[in-house]
Length: 214
Image (spheres, rainbow, N blue to C red):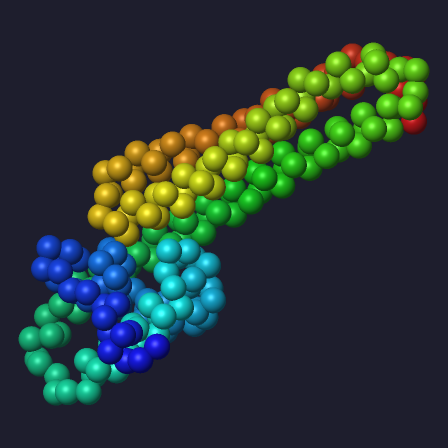
């Protein structure tokens, strides 16, 4: 893509982000992308972290920065350094929170998926025995909770994406509510795993091991 086409991706709106240069009208500033690159993140990592960005957006940020540096510096520009630093601090906190949320979500998917697979494997081992019709209904409840945990984690992941979309599109109040829903779904996923684990433990405890075929 030619340089003019890349620069066309950079927008400036006095009513958005204090009139600072943003990317394609979104509430993501050019300086935010440059800060991520300066912190050592690769373009691939940035695109993974912000799925609504495109590789040309990162190139456009670099081209824009190069053009802005190719002229004399206005001493008044230094007056915005403190405000920019504060904004970057908030952005870093948001990024850390988002990373922690993604790790928690990944954990919820793994533990619920693992619980469901373990129960299905056990039921499969009993399928060819005379106790199959007796065992299967007993473990339906814990299996249901593990599946519900997976469903909640999947919905949470979807809501997290829409939270990011709402943030960059200037719909922060709507995004705040979406974030609350995502948090509730994430907690519900862990709660389903806890209940499912307890239900599975109770079933194993109440069902004599002598009736289970190894």
